[in-house]
Length: 372
Image (tube, rainbow, N blue to C red; front, side, top):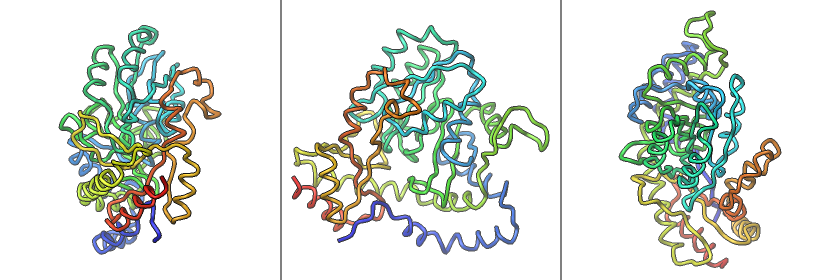
């Protein structure tokens, strides 16, 4: 049996009849930049997230960059991110050219999210060093961070919150979908995401009108009106074609997320008795975890992956090199992030997507159990 790690072609099969006339109309109108479909998708996505506003942008990294730039950050600023995240979270911070900032990496907890106890301990000792502070919780793997504690900490220590929700479209915590809990939020809409475009795309959500207007300007050269510039912005607009595709897929997002949860539950049931593999845990504060990634931990990972590959089961490592061990961020290697560094050598992601059927799941889990 051959197993796919993801299956985007089935998504296309589901939406193509509905979307084909819309794409044909787009090519007739040729409003490829700034088309009506962009605002329609923004409105629908903000409603989905229960936020007042949404701003479509070119990709998830740019969503983070623009969100940071939209915030009223004073120099100097402490910017706190999880040590266990994709490098885009850290890279977005480096694009801030108009302020002095200090980037801080905080270790992860057993759920692979930012450890809120370490976060608060760090702020107790260091908050007075900066005029501003931004906390960037990342809802990693589709599992929300502990936003109740993070909101309390942010209020106590006068911090802004930028949610990195790039892997968590539709996750729920505190009875709210992620993206509307902090001051502003950034989503990637990369093809492999739970809500994915047919290319690069991203979106920003907020309930703050000032941040919304500034983000809209920043994505378009810093301009509210053509040739009139208020900020040093970027060319980071969302394409009309991607908005059409995303707006159509959005209708299926909850259904596809629920199918992912069913896949994860089947994995859990079939792997829970295997003491040699650590399956994902769900924190008690979670209302809905949407399993963008199903990451397990094993010893001797290379051998484990090789065995699965020999049985036509693809795997991916998210992420093999912690941020502080990469060349661009080696100056951050003084942070004592024991869990992040340990887990980076053990984590491996199994195939997960809405259309993975029971026979395929059973094959994957039987192969894993036979390996051990």
